[in-house]
Amino acid sequence: MGIGRRQVMTAITIKDHAIRYVRGRNTSMEDVADFGERYLPKGVIENGRILEWDTLVTILEECVEEWQLKKQKVVFTIPDSLVVVREHSVPLEVKDEETTGHLYMELGKELHLPFEEPAFDWEEVSADDRQRHLLIVAAPEEAVAEYAKLLETVKLKPVAADVSPLAFYRFYHDARYQEPNEHLLVMQCYPSHVLLTVFNGETPVVTRHLNWATEGHQWDVEPVDGELTYEWKGSEAEVMQAWEDILFDVRKLRNYYGSSYHQGEKDLTKVSIDGDHPFLSYFEEDCRSKFDIPVQRYDSAKLRVSNSDISIPERFHETVGLLLKKEV
Image (cartoon, rainbow, N blue to C red; front, side):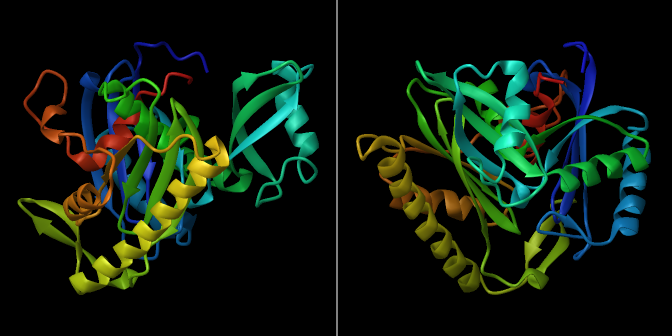
């Protein structure tokens, strides 16, 4: 979009339960100027779908005024529940400038997506003497347009959309956690869902969106140590059982990745766990005790606002990674 690399940008992530922003320069995580968040009432957004438009607009207008974001250029994430990642191949003779049109021609024939009118981005990951092998990230076009319209309604200027796993991976990469020949499982744990993404090197090859088998009405916003946070009001046993269900799906995904992508010859090499679920520390320790590969979690004490001692909480990692998006 022609935005200078050193220009100040704003990144906004909107989840079912919270809106978060980070402002700064998109050069490194050390260039964050400020950040903030606002928790949402239950039922305003569910599974990424906006149910109470007017309420959300009112809340976001208050945020824009409080955070002094009016008329600023923003990048935003598409809701996790609506995103699909696919590998797809096209003939070698299809040129870059023809690829998007070719993919639209193949919809419903060679390329199958769970929605009729997608918005998608693609990246070539390899090629041989016959085909170009692409990674496609897609979402319903109407959902992308709805979130862009939401931001425009509150006097922001959306310039690019992204997906949560790629945003977090930029953070992970900028933190210098990446290792050669890595097969990484990213587990992003939120109160509403867990998002699993397997990266082969820097390429996301498979994702799974898993809803918690817990009652959503048992979450509430409470002040803890001087700031608001999401708190679970139900029994811990219910969360632990739901977590076991998540781990069952993690094991299935691990087996699927090893057998379907590498014929059993390669496996995951590391897990990175992140998010804003209040039980995240328990999840981390449980993974360490049950997995036979390293489990990594970024030390948030290292992440600070530029030229200050103000720490940026762990729940902003994804939004910081979104700020690092260069292709805008």
